Amino acid sequence: MKVLVIDDDVDLVDVIGYALRREGFNVQIAVDGQQAVQRFKASRPDVVLLEIRLQQGNGLEVLKRIREAE
Image 1: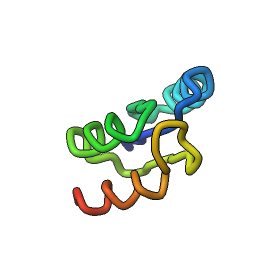
Image 2: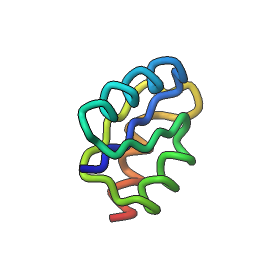
Image 3: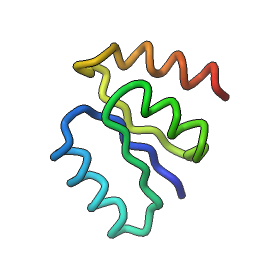
Image 4: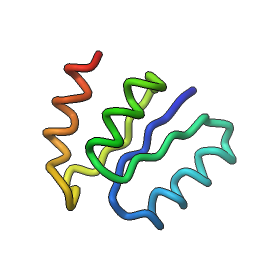
């Protein structure tokens, strides 16, 4: 199962990514909205973990852009 983790806290996404990979998930990480949309389009993950309060942009706006990319 592919998981896309989106958060601007690099340490947090590293920890989450590590834990998910240990459980056998294929993990992609994005640290900003633009990168998140690009990674979503490229990998078409099964699950997206998205921080709503991103420093560079609003997580809800990123979600809207991801939904438009589907």
